[in-house]
Length: 314
Length: 108
Image (cartoon, rainbow over all chains, first blue to last red; front, side, top):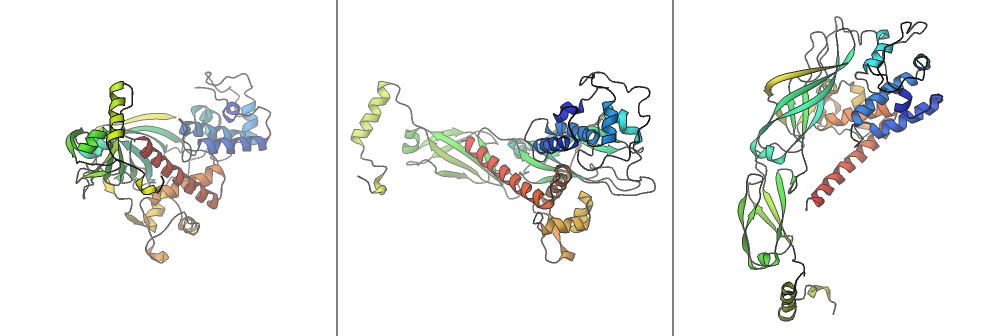
């Protein structure tokens, strides 16, 4: 198993005082807390941090850990010394402050045996806790329905009272018409019950991956459609992508930028289907050549148009 | 300790719940493994908003489940009190809202 450098994880020196350790923990916990953090690997870092703090905050565990010496390097292959644990008494299961779910093999080998069975599991029946996770899907999945795999790391208590982290991959049906914010409840996929208690459920909160073209509000889908000035002015029929496939859209004459064209029922195919809104945008060709310049100049000279007519300025 | 488990190719079919669907106080407590008193505290702190009048008939939106868990995790892991957790939750909501707006703007 790998040696873990708890001081390095906490970013403190080996001679750090207890209050420095607490300070470092609080600071890093705020940074990497999975409910708060947007950092990559936040969950893993938070777990390491919880483990490091579990050891370093407890003078007894810390002293024992220190006795391993400072020559170990993080990730170095580690075996506890044969006389390990003599003269120390590690009390109780980890509590408060830190990830309650499975600590590393390294931690278990040093401090694990001292833990009693968690929460008196014998002759005790309790309904398992529900678990919550997010599932990120594509907008198109909601249009067509799909099945998606989701990987979850779940803490689990073994009959001996050890907490282990299980990696689970579940394949989940994404029903057609699902919307952001809805939840998919998978019965019995949460934490196992204790004794004859029923397992908890798994709630998956649905979220769409950001899309290049579309954004979604409820069951309605919005698309910004770039148009050339003459398409907007003269009207045109243009090819437009929609999540259910390309369509031909008729742009009416004299369309202004920002105008919304509603395609009824082409939003998310929910029970009451949403609409697809095409929001027109006018993109001007830049004056890169003489021809374009000449045409703009002709419009300036020959078209009577004051876009600031309502602003009462000369 | 890690172990891997693959549930084969079986496709799980779940029940779709609206964010606005409600559950009872008892279900909320069971789902999040918290005591009634904790829920009462969360309500008095404004973290949770019950629907349906007096305490005997309290119901909570499905969307509250995550909120309860986050509040409890923040309290446990960061050493903040419930008021602090409430503030963090509100700020997190704001961050999520801003992110959503930013995405809507940058997809233009």
